Image 1 (cartoon, rainbow, N blue to C red):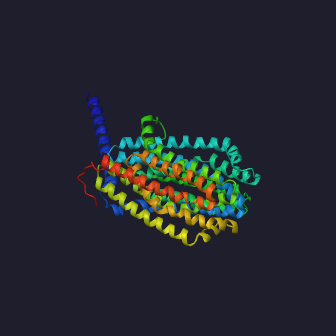
Image 2 (tube, rainbow, N blue to C red):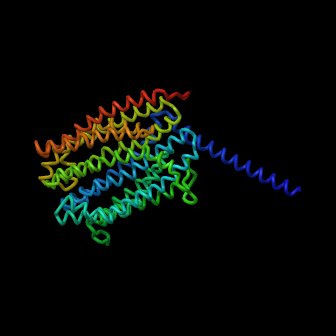
Length: 484
């Protein structure tokens, strides 16, 4: 009898210890999240959250440029081939990043509402989603890349380069998919430094390996365009490995279960309520580029110019997307915590910062477009076509700043469909029809005006959506906390 009582007492003590441990963990999560996301002054918090992401995205933009710079050294046909494959890469990244945006938004909102179990569930589900996404593009790399290139070019050299590059980056996309997802999970908890380090590690490895594998330096085989793809995959593998190490080295505000976990499809639905519009929104850019390449396909130099532009503009847009990554979890957390003042102050500061970044990029594209194109070994024909192209397209930068941060607001509060509507207006309703009309009536030089025309239309659409969202859901929010 005494042994039984002692056993019951030990069981009760163990249960009490577990309960105290759970309470301590919950308190620790509250301190980690609420002190930072709900109380730190917005200006300081946005800098802390966005600074590492901006550095990371800028490094990645530099890698994209360097990658194409080395490819262009092979030949203009090699650059054209990579430009043709670019829409498929954009489509792949759209799926990976869009899924991560849904995870980021869901986890941030659950943490803001103090629902930690749901946040863990979303984080664990995210890895399964990353694997499934990668399998889709493995199939694309195996079965679709050859007919895809055949649809755009009859030049055997361009076709060969495109198939080599595209098949490698698609088949081995698993590394990138998992890496991006873990980075989004970390960002959703307010940790922006680790994702920066992870992303930079892959980009730096890629930049170092590009010339080695492309030109056969240091005893490596000379792989040409395939070498650029190989360097990319190795860089992504390094980033994924580092992401796993960083995430599992110590306790996080959310936890990922790898074993004994069953997907809750309700969570998947919640993720894609925001993620799917984001995927479609970013995929629209891919389809826009596919269509634009088709319009320009009779002029290979124009395709090379458009490809060079998209590489160069990433150096301007990527820092703004880094700002986006830092602002979104702040917005999502404070929306979940019903703190209207902090939510809107984050949005306003984000717009102001994005405008400054875009203005600097606009000046560079207006003042030194020739020097930017010479990075890609541009010949005289490419310079003649490319200089006015960069000056005219870059007129879209300033209105784009408002559109990007408005989309961040929509996604952060769980209304990614608003971002989708704006993207459809910009990239399908405006850019492609305008490009087609201008190209066939006034020529290729005039067709570049389709970009700023579309961004201005998107600006007015975004403004209408922000006003509607504010009146319907943001204005009624009420919180005892005051914006700092």
